[in-house]
Length: 366
Image (cartoon, rainbow, N blue to C red; front, side, top):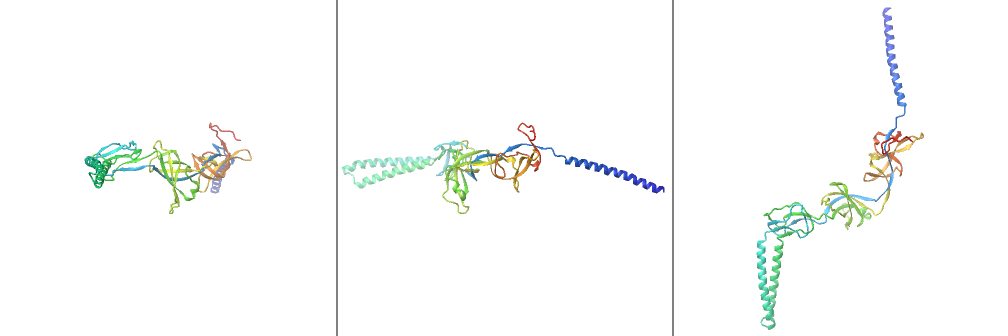
């Protein structure tokens, strides 16, 4: 009997303990349910409005910067370098002396040719004086004249050969790195230094044949390069190739750019925007206001619900060209609509929001 009583007491004790635990848990669950049923506080957001801008249509392409004149200066005749008249990186004018080759032999040859020409001239003058007196025949006169002409030609040839020993800048430009040294023997065609005319400068690129009707000489172009990412270089189309490449079905375009600061260099990779002579009105937003996804881009538009509270709704949009941090919205949004400017990941459709103004103060809910 005592054992049964003890067993009953233990069961009652366990029932009380377990009932207390279950009761406390039930109370906690009710509290949590009550808290979750309460409306969430509105999210604080910054907003922007969709605006209409006039954007000039442009065709995007990639290409390379090319010098209007750019060569490796080389010698036409062999010889030993007697003097070098430039330093690497110099700016030179057309005709400036770059290199002089040893010309002692050529100078001696020129003196010989001049002496021969002087003798031939004197002989020609004597024959010319005697011809009216019938002291010489016409054939002697013709021979003397031919000898004199040949002697003068040999002088001109020697002078031209001597001039080739002086290598001059072929045009105004900027020199590269010197590739020869004083006293060095240079064979014909040895590269001496690179020279490029940098201002103005060309950009060459290709466009698909379908864009041919949209491009013409004089159309504006805007060029950017990786070396100067924050600056664009303006110019215009200066030439369009007369044929289309049959393998790629593209046409080569050349534009001329101002390059007063010599920031553009031949060989640079360039991104080119070829403008059109008309403007298009497009709805634009800052890029931060758009969530870009592989399954579709969207924005959060700010609207009022039936209770007059501000909420956000997810709006799928079609985006277009991006310029200066703003993206064109081709569909899904109208001018003047208010959207969340940034911080889209912390929002969900239908969430209540409060707008934060420029001073950082919270505006009252409308």
